Picture 1 (cartoon, rainbow, N blue to C red):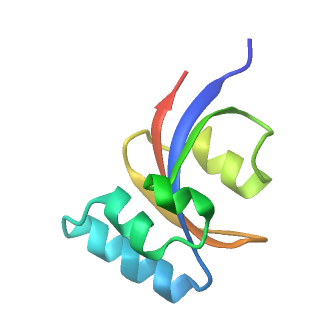
Picture 2: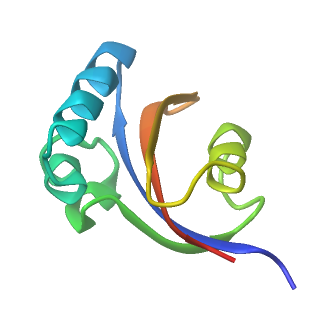
Length: 93
């Protein structure tokens, strides 16, 4: 059976903006509020929630983080063809 994960992300066009948003979250801003306000991905309307997916469904750079990094921590900036992401893995297994 495939390993599944749940994650949410914030997508922005620049690394500078991504780092700034990460600082806001680290300082106590809610991930979902920041996603709704700043994310360029349609998932931003859902607080950045991407739902449940398996390895290989996302671009490789995204997959690598989601399936190897610590759960319940904000990771990034992660650069992909779409821009820069902050990724929070909410569940994996």
